[in-house]
Image 1 (cartoon, rainbow, N blue to C red):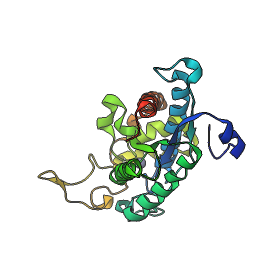
Image 2 (image 1 turned 60 degrees about the vertical axis):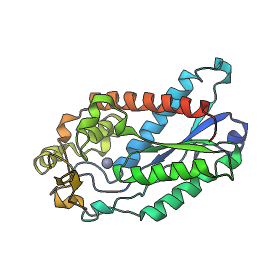
Image 3 (image 1 turned 180 degrees about the vertical axis):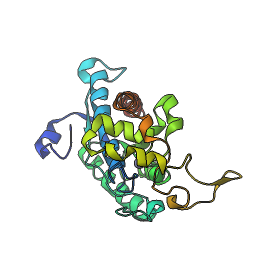
Image 4 (image 1 turned 60 degrees about the horizontal axis):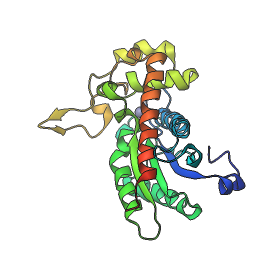
Length: 254
Ligand SMILES: [Zn+2]
């Protein structure tokens, strides 16, 4: 169930086990991929994950007891100041982000939806979302429990190729939103790309902003991620999200 498309009576009458809250960003993704890449990819994984969850059913219950996974509307602006040098990038402070995401999530337990998974698409949101999930779960005002999931950390051996606007994100876009990939700019995107994210010494990244190590915003080779690879990534990430959801639904509240 996509929450924004449902009516309130639909939600009242549904048996919602868990809500996926897609969390993205509006930030540069090189000359070839849209500013909304992280949001688009997070939504695609959340929707595929909801379908996979509902198809699998609750593992230890009989099939009739399996409920739905609701997909909340996405949070489109995140912790992305590191891309401030590139036009169109938007960001909020980690404090504002944590407060907003947490309060948005806290509206769901009022309707009996007290299992929440943040389905994240942006690396800069990871630390803040982990904190939101902990605070949400520890809150004595409700019985809610939340965890944060980041799709590109749940794609097996592909994960090492992450980069930025590189093979993985471009592949997932090609599979799910192909019209938004500027295929005629892939060559330029590859040529201006950095090989790795950051500038590392003794385990410390010296670069606070992405323009310190990439000229066009890209890290990795976007031509190494075709639509077929994107479908594989979508399957891996959505299956991982469905498996996580089953565990979150089964788990006792903390
Ligand atoms: Zn991204």
